[in-house]
Image (cartoon, rainbow, N blue to C red):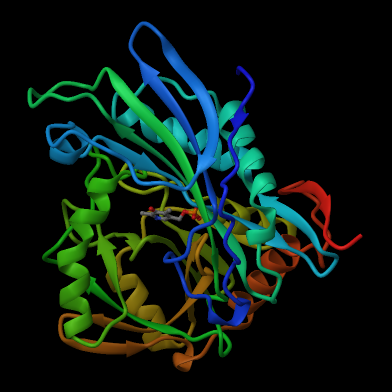
Length: 359
Ligand SMILES: *Cc1c(COP(=O)(O)O)cnc(C)c1O
């Protein structure tokens, strides 16, 4: 890639205090941008002051949703050093998402480099209070101006970052989830395996219904039989039934979560049996009733989210007595330890930014 040009803001802001942070509403001083044009390829990598876009009202992404993104984090350890968690894997996934939406190839090394360069420029925005992090949002949108339906010939790849608060401010809190037989998130042959804007739009209606019924998240069942588990909210779903850990296979309707992969790797390191296979909702309810079930969601935002209650066909089933299970807690503590540099990182998931704050 040609060298990234850097234009620093003339008006640097002071990042908010760590204990005021929540999620996704504060952004740093700079952003990364890279343009694509058919015939010219990706060009003009640049870090510029955080700014608005100007888009023609006919820009195709606004009409047909040709948009992808990813989400990853940088952490400031107790040693003051900044670690990026599995940035190379997130970069590869962004490119894979783009393939589903007929976007031009994005060089994963370039994506990773753009992230590192931006975090480096805005490293004073990486918070340091335990549990806080810098959330990184690489995004690609189709920017050609037309209303015919075809893949765009122009794109913008950009990255924004912002400090986010601890997900669990008062300890791990098991969530209540509701399985839906009426709504589906994605189907095999569709875009379920891509991190694309439309999947999120498609999830909103069912999520609102679940909230009205007193649940935090939707447990998505497969789109054909409405019987097999796919995902939970915007996380992958996993459970321990007796002494086996099971999670749905990557069947084309499921997003290949990087946290999911980290968890499977750790469980196998620990000598536990992990099986990727279809899991029917009746099997889950039977295990909940038998008291042999522990269940959690996996995703970058929460890392691990314990599930304490499952609603299905108007009935509510407690899971693990509504409490966070031991394996759930161990997984959370281990991954968080790796992210903040307090636990060994045998798989090389973190990469240091290479700067030490305050000395
Ligand atoms: C992002 C996402 C996940 C979690 O992926 P991670 O890489 O673990 O953050 C799971 N499911 C869906 C639908 C997602 O969009």
